[in-house]
Image (tube, rainbow, N blue to C red; front, side, top):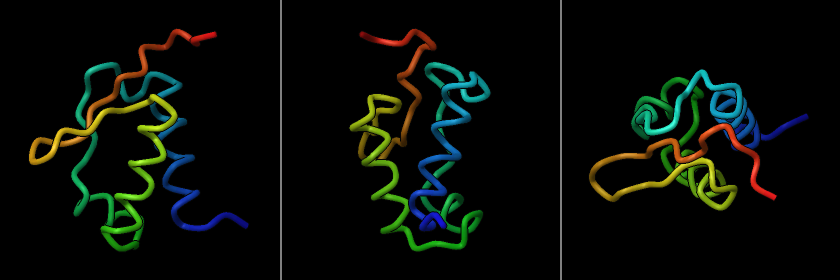
Length: 75
């Protein structure tokens, strides 16, 4: 069974990799994701950090997180 953080990472990465969240698109805010997944904002931040390490998103303080993955697998 997955942790709530792993569930969030998996769901968002699926949305990004499938193109349902497109390159340049802004992700929902931390509060919205926390409510949607019934987790703390700390859990959301941890999940977003992992997505950054996977080079799927970039986060700008005070602005939000944006999809950087463009559908092309990098070697």
